[in-house]
Length: 122
Image (cartoon, rainbow, N blue to C red; front, side, top):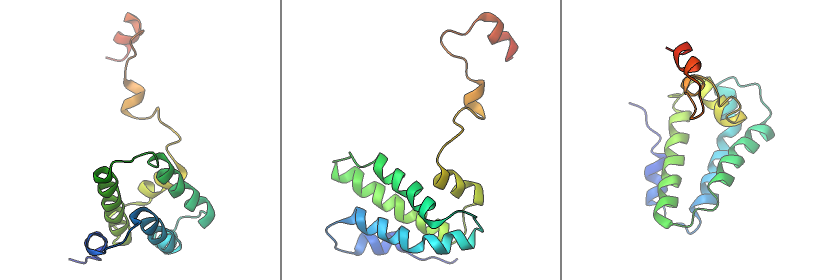
């Protein structure tokens, strides 16, 4: 089985700032990923989508959680480069979660739902 061992290399590397190193690794591989998956998206927009994911977790100060997220990021990058993901998975990351009310979320009943809504969904 093919393996790039990116997460293992990241764990073994003794660097001070793991988050910027992960971001640089992702930014470096981004044009290749867009070509492999045939995604018609400018690199700047894809980079902005990745940047938004990093910004969501920028307030995390716990070292253990940060290290776990960094290692998970390397694993996601490795799985992407080994073509374990499909195109819609990457589009969801690059373009963000635009449609949050799809699938199972659409079928959930709220606290204020009426009896008619409950029977309509059955």
